Amino acid sequence: MRRLYDFLEQDTRTASLARIAISVVAVLLIWQVVSMVVTNRLLLVPPADVAAALVHEMVDGAMWTNATATVTAVVTSFVVSVAIGVAIGLALASSRMLSLTGGPVLSALNSVPIIALAPLFIAWLGLGFTSKFVLVILVAVFPVVVTTEAGLRATDPQLVEAARSFNARPMQIFTTVTFPYALPFIVSGVRVAWARALVGIVVAEFFGSFAGFGFAILSASQTFDTARVLGYVIMLGAMGLIGSVLFASLERRLAPWRQE
Image 1 (cartoon, rainbow, N blue to C red):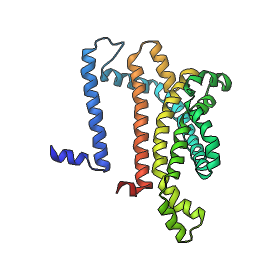
Image 2: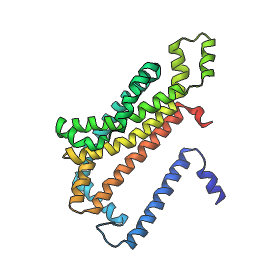
Image 3: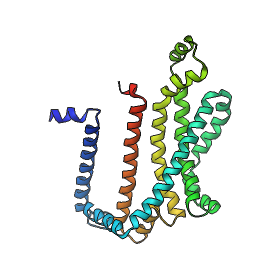
Image 4: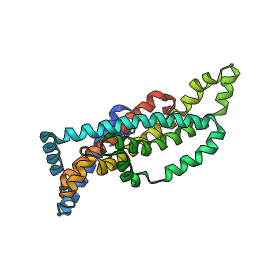
């Protein structure tokens, strides 16, 4: 047992996969036990029923249609939101005046419940890709802005002074010291933004889409098809998990000194 514990504590790909597998198995076991206690199938169904519903959706072709709609919209808008967030964070970190004047405005916008305004975006932009694209960007961009600015401002002044002592120019200091130091902060913001993007796409598809995971969840809930609802929720959870693992791997590659 001690060997297993030590193995699971390792920071290796095999250990990470083992930890994920153990977590999934534990959740499935708890789910199965709870479903045996909760006999009302409108509230909860066992994992086998959810698996059967997912297989039926795949065979029927609905899964691929919904997956294409959701993945296309969320990935496109997420990439754009990360680019915008990093650019705004760089601008705020480079200018104290801009940070003092634009920071409060961004904080106020971040406090606005964008999700609650989803029906307005649907009315303005119509049904389909455009409204989902804009809504996800507005939901996902702020974590990247905040962490980018915080990471750039958190750079160790001694490292900057050391670079200047070697006559490094401002751009060289940025590319070799400041930005690499801020990378872990930025990746952390990107991970949060990915989770928020998934929430945003589901809400957008609730209100303004004819395909997608959110649309499928809404239509299944209206017919009290709990198995389909949980099936698509699991698919969204899998997307979130895959994104988190990929971004954690990206952070290890871009900032290996953080693991030391």
